[in-house]
Image (cartoon, rainbow, N blue to C red; front, side, top):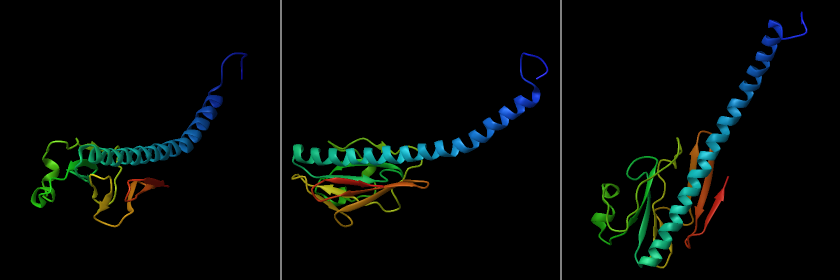
Length: 161
């Protein structure tokens, strides 16, 4: 320093270089944390909707179905099972709204649950069946972050990182 006050231009450049290096390290770490948080939030929301479907099935004494990518990718709905296969299995069932159907739930960010997630059906006794096997496995992912959920026949949900 030439005088007792202020900084020289060189000192200012050194401080700016240090800030740049720290930022270059911190930004990717923060972005990964954001992605991980989106995956965590999405999996918890899916778990809540599965639990809600079970409670609705028991309290209303009717079957409900949890459908993923319904009506579009990254969305899910809880739909009442009518017992009429032409209605329940119709391609446009996600676009229709019948009594007791849920709204559309959107996954946060770029979170997805794979190309062919299972369709879960819960009967009036609270017992789950799946288009795949039971326990049904659903993996929620975004980028390099993922979280798996296993849904048992009784509706118990276990999460795995």
